Length: 239
Length: 397
Image 1 (cartoon, rainbow over the protein chains, first blue to last red):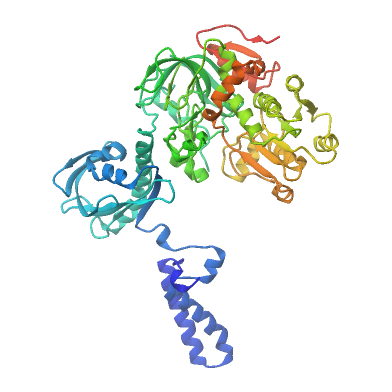
Image 2 (image 1 turned 90 degrees about the horizontal axis):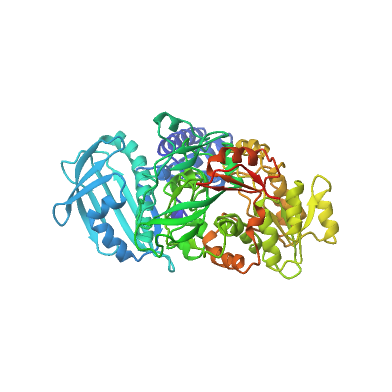
């Protein structure tokens, strides 16, 4: 594997600590200028190397990945849908269809070619509105969007439809990102993993709607849970 | 309507619950005429399957009459149907390959299953929320999703008891045998002579096996397997591996079917270990059966596993499997794939699935039925429940 193919595998804080420690080791060993300082020089260069490259060969050999790439702010998720990209694009791009498969979206009102007003309903019944703006649009292959000025938070995302290999249909890739400025970085950090879960869920619902023509549900089916407290008795939950 | 509800460990009750209604366009509502208690229901009964909630309606083997359909879907009111326990959309990558139990679009709680297994299989009736949380068919009525793909129409010329098991255990035993890729004169060994084992024995012979050896320690089950054409082997009386070697000239059986399983749906090693000890409907260490099958199987043979496994296996003799170049075939049954073929076998009289029935009860008597089956009393092999019928348990002569 050459360096350009290497993906980062250490976290941001660790990277800076690695750089600082490595520099310290190198500085001290170079000051001594004798063979007894050689081990420190080797360790120092190693630490500086992994700090600069954002890559640790030892981690790589052990299969460890501590980079924030895995749980970073960009929540991209993907699913295969057995339909052609153009058909899926058309359905998704008609944003009024969103309430059909996005579980937290209760209504979408189209304002103009690129703007639409979204009503979200969160668990617990709390609902709020925000305005979405489409910032880039490539027919049959995807589009980008962001929250317009005046929305209660700052968020952007995109959805892409790529032909999957063979006859498998389309690879749908959706991502959502809460920006650091609007809503604050803490909110963004908290909101993104939740949003990722929600996007993952909505992608599965989109797939079912497109492939099966309906979304599987059990809401409204009978059960013996006539008294609310009985729902508290459950069998073991997975570890 | 009346329905069998799970209320906690060893606590099922027949309760009055709301009638089911159509929730999706491809749904149908079926009035149940016959339903059965499956061995896997006992694990729900014993509370060892995670994500079950008090009030859940049990049952995944049932048949009846269509009383309502969502939209035009090939079924109409009055159709007599058997419903497969696997819920499948018929359109996804997996359904198109007839891998119906791996359907992508039928589990509303797929993310829960993904956490445990990486990907989710199909939703199942009455089998915990990880498998979709669908209300089951031990009830007077049931909602059947994707009714245009699942249920098979059955003629009046066959009785409920002859076709009821097309819903699960007959296709399960048949797929287990088919997975063995049986060649003429093959010797097939079957571990566990419960209902699935009985159908595996008969299916293996139908598929051309030269000899089928049935392993269990319950005499009535061994006798039934013998009546089906198998050579019985009681593991309380003989050393199974030793005996199989003698019977096969030292080669071992060409394929081995594990109809025992362990059905412990935990994901941590210690949880599985506990649950292995908790084996219920066959009084044996469950992983022990699989280990024994691997040990006994001939080189290059097939291990077919219809018995359900849930988590991480402890002390699994994978080295033996590797050294002998074994092939493993397993999974939930692709019921829809087998129903038409097996229905024609029943209609032609080649096989009568009702032979496994030992007890017939009214739906009201479900709690006694679960207790009886769970405690392995009264030579119980299979219990059929009839809604609308209230009569005392009767043992088949």
